[in-house]
Amino acid sequence: MDFQLASLWELLVDSGPDHVCLVAGDVRHSRRSLDERANQLGHHLMSVGVEAGDRIGILTYNRAEHVEAMLACWKISAVPINLNFRYVADELEYVWRDADLAGTVVERGFTPVVAEVLDRLDDGGRSRSAGRHVVLEDGTEGAADFDAVEYEAAVAAQPTGRNFGRARSEDDTYIIYTGGTTGMPKGVLWRHGDVFFTAMGGGNYFEPISTPEEIAINATEPPMPMNMLATAPLMHAAGQWVAMISLFSGGKSVIYTGRPFDAADVLDLCAAEGSQTLALVGDAMAIPIAEEMERNPRELPGLFAVSNGGAMRSLATRERLAAAFPGKILSDGFGSSETGTVGAGANSSPSEEGAHFTVGPTTAVIDPTTLEPVPVGEHGMVARTGRIPLGYLNETSSESTFRTAADGSRWVLSGDWAVVQDDGRVLLLGRDSSTINTGGEKVYPEEVEAACITHPDVAAVIVTGVPDERWGARVVALVEPVEGATVELADLQEHCRGKIAGYKVPRDLIVGPIQYTNVGKADTAWARTHAREQLGIEETS
Image (tube, rainbow, N blue to C red; front, side, top):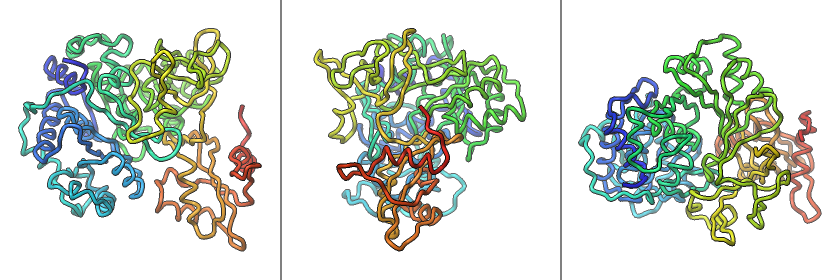
């Protein structure tokens, strides 16, 4: 046996089947019940012709069936593909084609956008094969306008045992879609064995297991069970990896299913389930949590850490959390879909300036040209070697992120500039791109600009980001109107909503001439400074 995700999971199940391992809304799963449901869905997918290596899109909000679907795919050596539930048809079609989806698990409320995409595809009918689309009920009325089967009917018709008859390998593919640093979403191509150790905790977050069989210890006597409350969407790496760290460590994964985010509900859930770690994403979640604890302090005896990943917390928010959760660890995780978990920072001094992280032996701050480590105190780029992804799916530009050094070692460059300090910790300095991280979602200026420029009154546009107390950053459009025309924010927003997801739509509009560089390109550095000046936001170092 090797480190294939479904095989590891089944070892854990068989060694301790009755442990409650997953809580999502009203659903409480033991390892046995979660495994049986995943088995049933796996048998259904095989029965409709899903082959090893086929990719199945999952388009749902947070719910237990999202985890069931991931496990089901891994059991039959298929590949679950995370689909962003905020996508409009154009965005969904791009990922659909890029991943070459063979089917979906989709909530009924999202079936209209799936139907729109299916109408655009010409793949010989594969996308419309009977049973390839499994629909989850979510209270939405109306039939799916394509051939689909109800999730509960699909699983009920199948056996709960395994017997899939397919060879598995730790070389099986795991793909997580991310925006990367520029352009359209990219599928990051991992091997199961690599992502298990690099992003899913390796069976023991502090001392990973050395043989697959060791994971059985986690079934009854886990050395470090991670009972974590995951608030991030499972459609993102942050949500998936927190859930899997909990499961594989022998702990309990509590998935927050509320919509929209409600801090009181999150804290009540944390108390009810005795969660040890509350996992948040940036100030967009941390500020409401701090505010709720200030208004209505709670006893959370099981909680020892409030963790953060996916977006940075501000200094002011860290200070508020420290006051709201006295004696608790405030931890920050640093990583990405391309790198996995790179480093961690536990803020014993919440007021410490900057983002400081302790990194492991496979992480270094390197010169991106020579791929050699830089001296202490000098600027370099954070990179990781060892168990890293194979590259991007269908991407010819993988070599700019995934690099091979002269000695044959492979590196993935994070895009984050940093310095190594005298104490060995890494201090992050900033990103190597203009990507806007708003509430944990990555927004690419080029994509928003492409939507804005189709407005009939927009002659030129630059999109940039400015700091935002709640979301970390927000999207700003600097627009030069067509001669004689005017552009209003509400009108531009309405225009963009039909082309891009809501979180990408500009929140501020600055109207006036666009400035260009001496080679005729839009001056993005000027745009960033000008936007802050016009909005009264002080420049930060």
